Image (cartoon, rainbow, N blue to C red):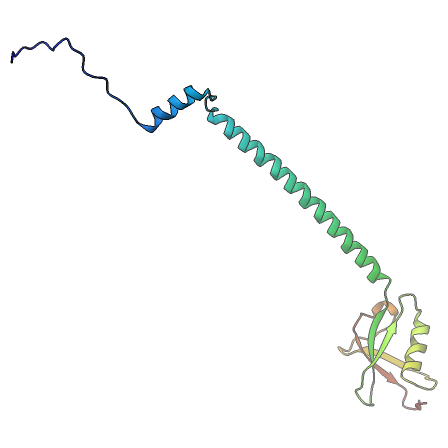
Length: 160
């Protein structure tokens, strides 16, 4: 065995690289596949998707809210034209409540006649109406839906 400091002229056998990456590149070259797209294209596509979807979501939300506002406005207009319900209680008699429906377009005099009729009172010379909280009712505008009204009549008024 000769010892020399010069390497032999024979070349070492080539190193085979069987890593998956090399196999993948070989297959790509063999099949003729296109090279991978640059990553920035994916980023741009993702950003555009987010923009389109958020715009679509905002548009749908605004449309839905305006539609709900229209429904609420229609319901308010219907309620505005509706009658109010009050409960009549004749002071000094039983505390029994009598339900009374007050139409929206009724006058004060018509309301007073309706109260007399509903409570079956004969002609009344004087009648005072208060809420259960003690507030005096002087006009139709003072009535609130669901009020409990205490009716005080002149003691000389007989029932029918």
